[in-house]
Length: 105
Image (cartoon, rainbow, N blue to C red; front, top):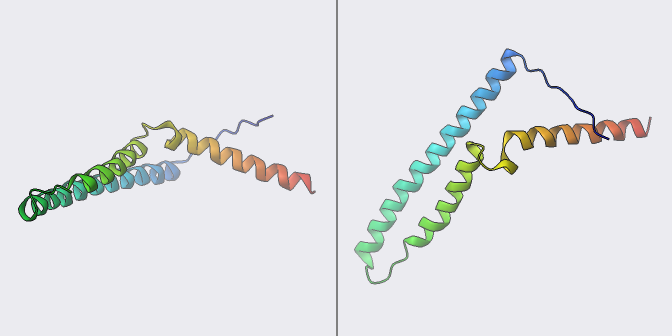
């Protein structure tokens, strides 16, 4: 049986959460900018040095998958990595800790 916990955030907590979200978004855009810049250089190097053997698409593809998942997490599109999941997991862990403390007292 689960206990529903209501979390009340004060202004300082809300500010901290908003700041953390902005830092995460900034980190995503930094990752995206690096991805674009580095891959442009890699494409140029590949086409200039060995145009008959194309390899640039490998880092483009694998790093691109990472960038997509990073974006899904930051913008909370992927529900497993979103804020709701985090809140539920925190409550679940806190509840287990409380049950374990009460069990031995």
